[in-house]
Amino acid sequence: MNLLSRILLTAFVGLALAFAFTIPILDLLDRPFIEQALLIFFAACAFGYLTFEILGAQTEITRRLKNLRFPRTHFSRAVFTSFLREHWPGLLLALSFFAVYLYLGLRFNSPTNDTVDNYLDADNFTWMQRFASPDGYHLEMRGPHPFAYLIFRPLGWLFNLFTLNPYLSSVLLNALTGALCVFLAWLFIKNQFQDRIYALLIAALLGLSTSHLFFSSVIETYIFSAAALIGFFLLLQTRKDDFASQITLSLLTFGITLTNFVQNLIGLFVSRPRWKDLIRFSGFTLSIGVLLSMLHAAWYPSAKLFFLPSNAEAEEGFAISVFHDPAWRAIGRVMLLIRTILLYTVMAPEPFVFRTDVGGTFPRFNFFKISPGDFRLSSYHGIDKILVAMWAVMLFIAGIVFLYNLIRARKTDISLAFILCLLFNFGLHLNYGYEPFLYSPDWAYALIFFVAFGLAPFAKSRWFQGGFLAFLLLLAYDQWHFIDFIFKTVAPFLPVGG
Image 1 (cartoon, one colour):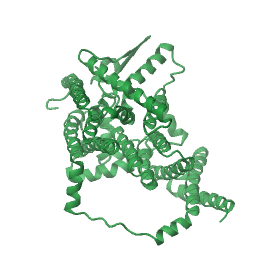
Image 2 (tube, rainbow, N blue to C red):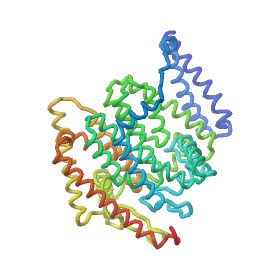
Image 3 (cartoon, rainbow, N blue to C red):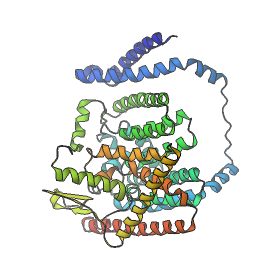
Image 4 (tube, helix red, strand yellow):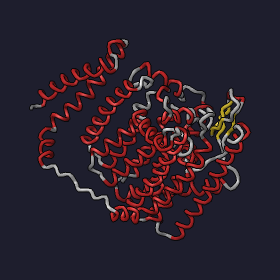
């Protein structure tokens, strides 16, 4: 089949399937004209692209089916023992963090106290219901989460089979995902540098970071995004040419929070800088993602489609017009974002506490405070300043090593992707999101992995390992002080017994 015939057939099939799909499933004929046009357009593009690829891959698919050999998988005691022997340090570390996250999660989240927006703008109370409550799917699912219910509801149902308690299921699911991030980080660094001790230090840093410590305990979607993003970079490292696995994991990223798909594109292009691969990867992921979003909206009527203007209008409430703000406020936002990305993500400052001044009684915590003409940022005190100085030195060294390698080798490695992911998040949240720390799991892995690559030349030094361990102990002390401050502040507002 020549190219023109293939394009014409693709257009016809895509349009036909779009009508057949949207009329009965999404009540196309009962919608306003603009929504009808957009639904047909996106569905036709998705079906059309998939049809185009299938037609072009007929010969290759036939060849593969003829030569198909199913791999023999042996699930034996020897295989299990070998896995444990190889990965026990990372598993033990992840298990330790799971215990910490579970303990904190049971204290932070309550099945009766609505603490939406109180804990650094997290919607923990509503997400807890969306995950596992029997009627949680009735809550609105905004467009930036294209098919989150399809991801989280089956997991919540599975956990409920064992716990018989939606609240406990949600806390367990969140804590386990945080522990999974620690294990995946350990695996990524171990594979990259073939050093178990260094991998333990870096994975512990990720697990102790304010971002992961907080959002592996306070229920939200962002720790799940972090797991998907770390897993994607692990695939780029270990299964670089496994297109199907990369698309599958990218669909998970896209379905939870669509903007994080850009980080998948960045990682893929830096790892494999071929435009054809990038276009095919984007085409497959977006096409399947759009169709899943439509199925999601049909299955869960409370879910919004991200490409419909009426649904996108809800996001205007989270937009920030930094370029239209007064200079003091715009500068304050920029400084807040820089400090959040580079400092607050890793080590917690002392948060501001709001009560009746924000229209409520239960304390609300944020890392900034705005009053007329004044934009104040959370700061560090006492011994915390030593921690900040140590982290600043690490960041500086990592930056110098990156530039040295770039100039000497005249080529880049995956570290460039981590920098670009940080810059992408900076640009995105400069104009979106009230409390930027809420989104910190989306970039915490990139920041810490970038530092890990920069400090790798010193990884085997006993002096370096000892100094890094001292840093982690100091960080753990700082984080416990932060968590304890929150618990003591909210204690008078909780019912007796928590």
